[in-house]
Image (cartoon, rainbow, N blue to C red):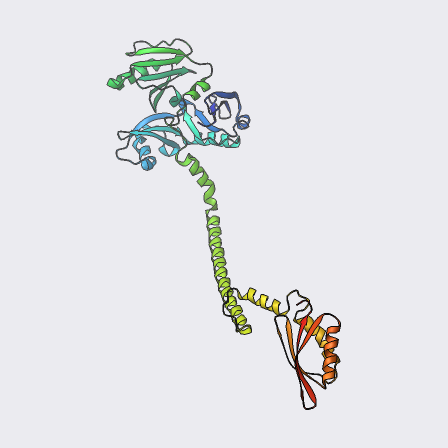
Length: 401
């Protein structure tokens, strides 16, 4: 059970009412009386049940053989049309229990429903249910319940069946209802009234209970959602009311959905295009790597492998990488008159140089100058006189290698 707020309009009023907040465990948390605007301030967080004056709602039963519940709204109004004084188009029909091809029906003036709901909305109140007073009388199988106040008598003779009578002719109408019931008449009539009622010659046992001080509290205590016959159906259901607000926006929402689908389609197309470009670029990188390093057998991540190979060629962070060796040795090569470089190669931190000099003395001086700074180590691999020059092969390394 949720926290509930019960509202009962004053007789003949659509702006003032009694209210009662009931906690989930069933106790009355607070109550009061006032304008709907004031009641709206205490309604937050509560399921609102509005109790409708009994004389404003007609309860009856309609025979609808084989009708499905979703078709009742079309069939019932015309099945009852001959029994109603008003045009069925001006009335609202709410449906309750179906038994043996008959359905319980609550009928109310549609304009009155609109006024009540408008007043409630203006007060910031969104009701979950509008319930006739008559189906909030106590109910016990085998008994009829009669309640009298404000010169009216309310007779509940079924779970969702009731009669509203003027107190002056109630005795006659109750006798007629008992006679019509025949073998299904109750074994007891329970009467709720402020004073001992003057009902005479009723062919049934009667039992009197004084009417409680708070009729609203008494009615709320007998609220059973399953038997209450909620008037908030059809055009007045919450789903339908949400639909009324939603319908003007359907076209805009449909357009937004189309734009969203287009946007998603474009995004997917871009994703696939970029994916294809990435595959092509990866293949291009691998091809470039194999061209630069034909001795490579296994290519797992060509970009990383190429960066690693280039780092090795540069000597990584070592101070004796290729650039360093060329810079150090190149200065001395350039300063040596008559020196000619034949070929040069670099591998694993070592520079192999083939050159020619004028004589062996120049070769010794070159080796001395290269090693003077302490940064290079030089090893003469070979030296031989060839005519007027000396051909030599040098191996140059950094001292940190």
